[in-house]
Image (cartoon, rainbow, N blue to C red):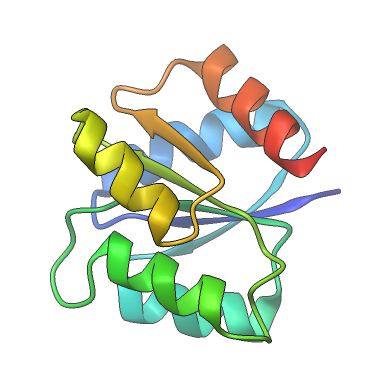
Amino acid sequence: MPRVLIVDDSPTEIFKMTEILNKNGFQVLTAENGEQGVAMAKAEQPDLVLMDIVMPGLNGFQATRQLSRDPDTSSIPVIIVTTKDQETDRLWGQRQGAKGYLTKPVDARALINEIRSVMG
């Protein structure tokens, strides 16, 4: 069962994405901010990370950059899931190492399709 780490400071968003992932056969881990997300990714080695951008402390771009540059976590694909839908945000996310980018509110089918395409 693939394990997905959701990093988001919104309990509502975590709940919604967890529901979608559970229905589609994924095991879910959660973190409430960037620091926690980076630490959990290192400790748990999930198959994929869903990363929010706007969070207190370490934001999603910074956390994605840390994950993609650390040899311990660089092989874990990150999909950014955010309300920021500007092309510049998308490009910046890719430059930080994100493999995918979705905007909220997330459509269940789009989420699962993006996860499957990134995981191969």
